Length: 106
Image 1 (spheres, rainbow, N blue to C red):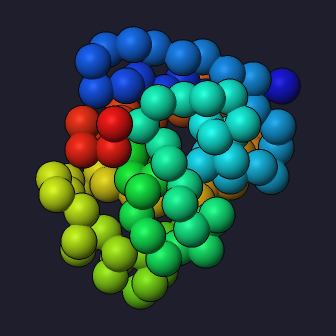
Image 2 (image 1 turned 135 degrees about the vertical axis):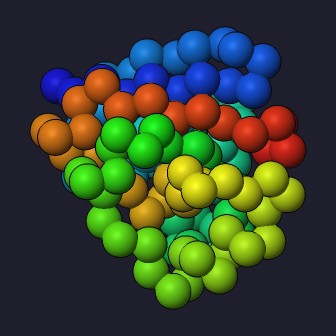
């Protein structure tokens, strides 16, 4: 099973086996990862699953939709690598992906 690593704002690292087709937000919530709230349940309407994904993973990720881009405009510390974890589904090519979590979601 693929692995996803969540790195919380304080440096705490959580390596989790991630079922394919499950969103990164769902994986984090299911495993009690601090910093991923997922208040909207994955409908891309709250941005409480904001994370930073390394640019090396960009070729393997879906393009940012207009809705996701709009939601990311409202996060406190957006970066070029900002994504909403509810919009990213685990797949074999994402095995080893690392998601850094912002401090504002604690």
